[in-house]
Image (tube, rainbow, N blue to C red; front, side, top):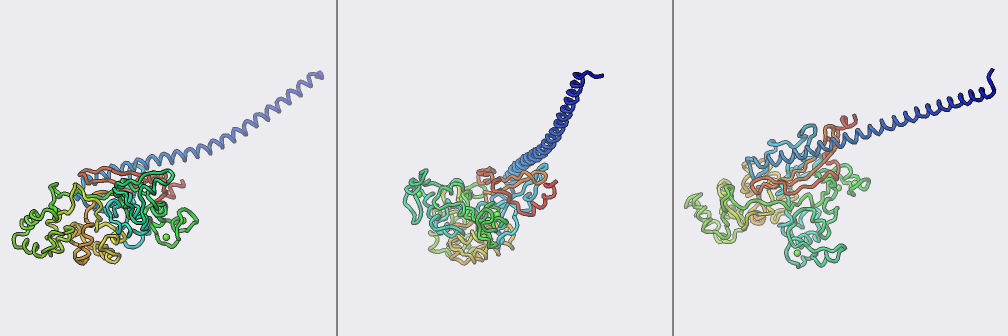
Length: 452
Ligand SMILES: [Ca+2]
Ligand SMILES: [Ca+2]
Ligand SMILES: [Ca+2]
Ligand SMILES: [Ca+2]
């Protein structure tokens, strides 16, 4: 028989076993919970590291694109002109597992682009805010007279206020106060310091700056940015302007050009050497009294009644500018109709006429500015001549990239300058924060892979 004390011991022992069972069960349960928790967070972490891995892949692809494009432009057989579209990768170019795209613009279309265009953009396809006269700035779509005047005041060396503009007395009254620069713009960001340059004026509806009307840019106030939901892209002024365009003011072989304003003896000699005494005499007598007052080589061509073939033989040798570089000429072959319409002597219909005409011409026909002579009348040639070029030395590479499965989106805007004979990135800006800019087609292409 069990003693009463023994029975108590047994009961205590059973009770302890039960408690131990409950504790063990509890531990098991919490292990399951912990396991579920960790597996979940491991999955999350796996995804995050996958994203950051793909982000690194994308960043490497952008570096690959930079090296590739610098090399391409440095070794271009066509220095000073846009590289042929078939001569380089611009759309889903693979760099290891990642891929990059160069976000471009279709400036040959006068309609808004519905899908993203790919390719390099020449900076001379835009209006240079360091050199454009006030009337040209005022004509930029979306520009206000006040901001145009303030841009002129910002860059000019004096402190005399242009009507509606702003000099230091305005900026010094701000909090924090700062001086008017009274010097050339070095980057587009500098505009944020200028009177009236709000984000709405700079970016317009094109918040991600891809030249395309994305869904959030056409839904009114439902999502950022504010837009008028009219199905049309009202871009900001950044779409049309640059601070980087310039070209060497010398002949292709590096020798000095003849200034047709100040070196008339040399000009006569060049005409005689190239075309012979008789033809040179005809050209000079056609120009007549205008000879001492030519505003551009194009004016020489028109007044001298030269053929396009004749002008092509001498235009590389001619200039009206002093200095090593000429800044701010607009490339009549690559600028959009909206940009061309801003140039003195041109208007919307002449600009569209130029765009339509150039589409059918070969790169060789477009090399020399003389092709515009048949399209513009004499006066338009005289007025616009000082602002036009057919060359491009600064290239905008707006490169977006993703990793293997479409994650890790990165975007970097680079300006590659070839005017010094080499190719160098003179400006770079991270554009990733502006969000997806490759349009819905590229996103769809990856959406299957991204959901795996
Ligand atoms: Ca000033
Ligand atoms: Ca857009
Ligand atoms: Ca919106
Ligand atoms: Ca709109």
